[in-house]
Each structure stands twice: as C-alpha cells, then as structure tokens.
Length: 80
Image 1 (cartoon, rainbow, N blue to C red):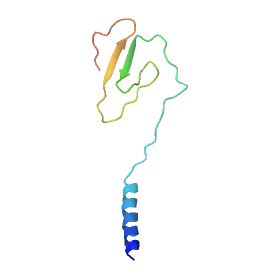
Image 2 (cartoon, one colour):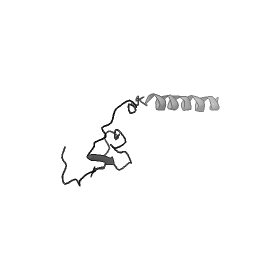
Image 3 (cartoon, rainbow, N blue to C red):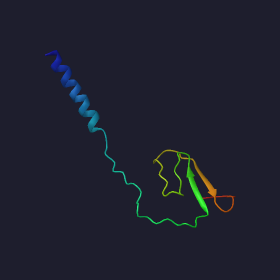
Image 4 (tube, rainbow, N blue to C red):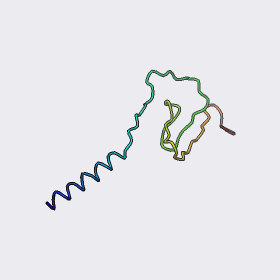
C-alpha cells in the first residue's frame, strides 16, 4: 500500500510537470531563398550566426550582441 501511495504521488507530480510545458513549432530557414551577392554590410551575432550565410536567429526576450562589418568600407555609424 505504501508503494502505491508513492507511485500515485509520483504520477500526479509527473503529469503536472508535463502539462506545464508548451509546444513551440520551429520554423527553420527557407532553403530556396535567394541571397543578394552584392552585399556591402554583414551583420554578425555573438553566437556565431551571420547574415552572410543567411538569416540571423536570436532568442526572444534575451539580450543579443550584434556586430556590423563593412565589406568594402568600415562601418562608421548604425541606427535602427
């Protein structure tokens, strides 16, 4: 009987833990997207993503370091 109580409590806690999660569908980059070959500015993130390769992905609600790199000339200022 004692084992049955522990199993029931474990089942309740597990079901509460699992039901608290939310499924989020991931949308990856479009592989058919055309890229512009004549780019003068590249945007790089601290986590390794680069606009040179494709899209940059950042996590929502988390601070992200971005770096602007000029291909043909150095970047003097940027605003957005």
